[in-house]
Image (cartoon, rainbow, N blue to C red):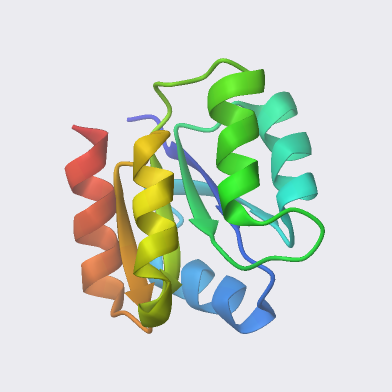
Length: 122
């Protein structure tokens, strides 16, 4: 069975470690980006099956990264899950208008992450 190609864009090194430990290597091929500009570069060269996108990142935030993927790169089908803090629900709602498949509020459990990914890959 082919691994799911998962692009994880988050500026927190501790979150990278959490994702790496929480997402089994036998199921997921993971690539990490520390900001939205890196995420766009990885997206273009790698074409992931799904994107986990932090809202608050330097250089290019999650909203503008999503906007570039959906509008400039004309990809409306790759599932994107926004990852954010509780106080940013209004921003996540803005992202919903341009095409996310859901969001996770930090902090979250590995089980919740796996459920959200699984639900959006079907």
